[in-house]
Length: 53
Image (cartoon, rainbow, N blue to C red; front, side):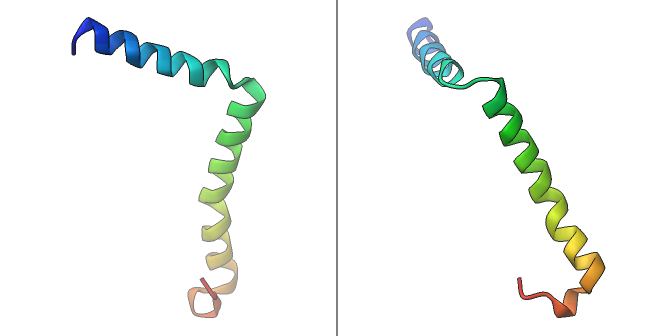
């Protein structure tokens, strides 16, 4: 990767990071974790044959 490409990528990454704060990052992480657990819990409680997914 050329130094010019590295600089371009670094600027793009800094824009993403600068536009976010710790609350946004935490929210994204918690929503991701919630999505991992919501569906398996529904399946284990109702059984796979009763789901409408």
